[in-house]
Length: 164
Image 1 (cartoon, rainbow, N blue to C red):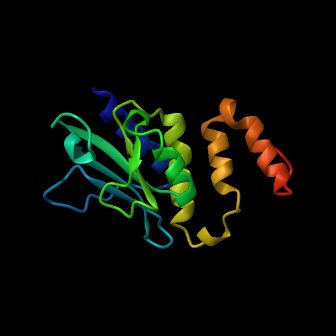
Image 2 (cartoon, rainbow, N blue to C red; image 1 turned 90 degrees about the horizontal axis):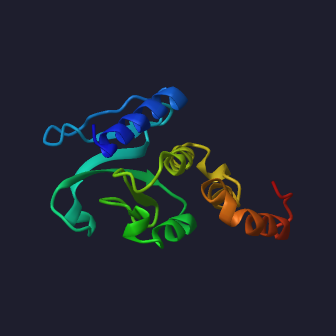
Image 3 (tube, rainbow, N blue to C red; image 1 turned 90 degrees about the vertical axis):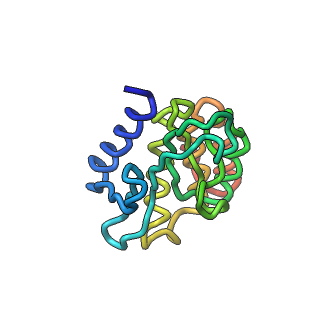
């Protein structure tokens, strides 16, 4: 079993375990591509696709699994700034300001993917506008605890919030 297949399966298992969501396979011509929707409003919060690497600007023509998730625009730019080597790209076939693409080839570890999946689910929800102003900072903190902890605390303090 390849890294991308097992990571894809882990994401689907996580979505079912955490949110009770099963994948929907909407495309006859791409039977492996799946959508994860919120059951309350039917909005997509994740899309699992298998696409040729060259369509993502990567070398090679073989197919790779990707996960598209909704993302706060301020955070999307920061995550994509690492470039292709970081495994997070602007959203493939989605609004590039509000979606990101995560490579499921092992470049991005599941410990980084699951908080992004959670944020995407929240952004797709009816309470999306109720996200705290520092929600991107909270996610950055979870993704990069050791690197950003001190700066995160400084920013929260400057905004008048208690540091974690």
